[in-house]
Length: 596
Image (tube, rainbow, N blue to C red; front, side, top):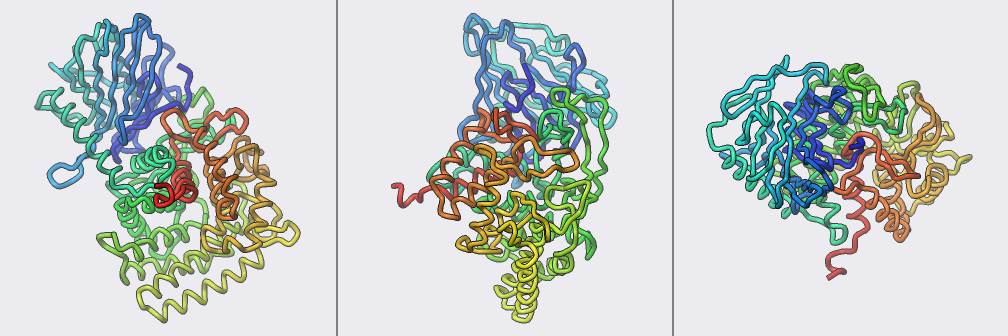
């Protein structure tokens, strides 16, 4: 099967796995999101004879397949059929449910295979690899388990199917349901089928109950629910981190070299994720993320805030190239780590304060923000006030230049503005006055420096004529109102320069890798939101419907899209893109009161 992003995601907020339309797990990192990809065939992680980096169920005389999520869940079902009409159903999930007063989310993948009719012959091929495809495991086995031992850790398959059929990859007629538990190298003392069934029922119940508690718009409910589940799956619950995507090195465009590792927590992206989930009522994700950023802020202790951290909170993400994997469709390089952690991106000070702001005004939280939290984030605001006109790499992470980027400056202003609002809310009159004065002073300077009379719009950087899509957020961040002529003028200038068909580019000027070739999905959603804010709702709804049609068959989006062919590119699934679905639906949907 040709590599594509026609993939489904399963997970449990500890690990995630991507499964293609034929039921093969092509990507899964253990024991966490940024761990070793034991399944990496998505990046070509298999030898010439196909013996590595995947977990496949092959149908002999394969004819067709179809795939779906079970209703309102992260449980994925793949059905395979042979040429005579025989079929099997593969059910995949990662266990997640409440047990003994806490959330049970082991680094485990559960797979069941059941016959649907006829006499289907299948072959199970379990071929994990280690060290990014460079090392094959040592294999040992017992009476009902197989151990795959790597240099740093081992994984264990426990199953009620024939071990010989797994070890030798023999084909066989599937006459009864088989269960395969793949996870930590620990003994399973109960019936595999019983455990698989109980885990399935409890995991399905968990997700459906979680969805039941969401506050969703009247229109586009299925799209919003799938986006919300995907965002939840992208949270690392142990620390509260939110990753940008499950993958590394899916190119932004064919053979572009724009291959990056997105399995980390960008403070900017994560703010938008928790904000989107919070507006749906999923407040626990926000509470966990606030704990994550408070710990980061404490570690910084007045120093420089990085744009990106590991899910553990680790600061150093040294970037290297993996030579053992050829890359998606052979389009390397494959990168591990991300050099962006060394960059200066001043907008992150605003992202951190914006994320924390919600804690002070949302009374649903078990621990609302208080004076202690305010004092912890004040020094972040102080840094924002010092750096609002300092050159940086910007949110697009330019590697070859630094400018005073307007978006970074506006985010620094937002940090000071929100601190003023928080202080007033807490009754801290002196601090409220201080931060209001600082914010107003910064606002006046950005007004003068970021606006270009010649271009007739806010521009990408102080004193520069170029535009970028982040300027569409000036209203969303409350820097200007929706009826401000400068907002309307900026919207018109951005769409004139950056719109390509039904999609928006993040910028048009050449960067370190040349001119961008594909559109950036979140930018199109920003454009949709800006159109709606400007009163152009019919245009916004039409573009939103088009973007929904660009999702893969399971409702997921990647980072980028070819505006001509509609093919998805970039790391997958991209949390930013899924945020766009939620925000646009919430803004554009008719109300429940008007609809019913």
